[in-house]
Amino acid sequence: MDSPRAALDQGFGGGVDDFAALLRRKGLLAQVPQSGPAVGRTSAIPQTQATTILAFKFQGGVLVAGDRRATSGNTVVYDRADKVLEIDRHSIMAIAGVPATAWEMARVLEHSFQFFRRTQLQDMSVDGKVRALSKLLRDNFGFVMQGVGVVVPIFATYDAGADPAARLYFYDAMGANFEVTDYAATGSGSPAVRGVLYYENNWGKKPLLKLDEDDAVTVALRALDTAAESDTATGAVDRNAKIFPIIKIVSRDGIATLLDKQIAALFKKGVA
Image (cartoon, rainbow, N blue to C red):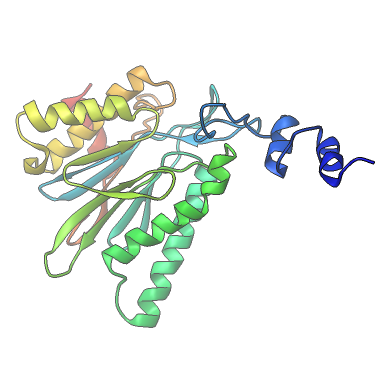
């Protein structure tokens, strides 16, 4: 008589250790490579992906920008995706990865911050906000290991504490957070974006921290336009449809969203 283990292996198709492995054998999840976990690999289920996002500190606070393209494989599924999301009066979460997962995280964060403010009669601390997003990413890591639902966000907020300042963080898929002194970028177009920001910060006419708002917006547009040249998943400025990146600024006064006509004028003057 076969042992219970042998019967289980036979029922699963032989040598399968868990349900996720069974799904992979049936072609319903990404195959795990021998060299490591399938982090960031696409599954057999088509996923919508949103890229590219960037943020950097300048004179007026933190500028956060994202292109508008969402893709599924080689297909553009949407060209007006909002990847720069307001969480509360002084906090922004920019998303790269699967929008369905990222937008749900943003909704949970928004409700968590509101609940804390209404019950404690004060805003949640910056450290509390940063850890709240880390926990959401950590709780989602099981799906990431299965090849679905990966999100790698950027978080910007204003700290009105003892040392008031705009603060910027980026995360990995496991929820580790890192505070940024100058700039951050994630998504498929981020290598090109980081190259542009590094050049502007070190050899541009001014370091990023000393730029005024118009110059900062121009740098962000140049970075996204450069990324679109080398990465098909990053959407360039659509001159015909008048589709421009989403750009928001976090400062002591709260969050300001730049109008398309302002972005268009700066694009025409400094990029096109």
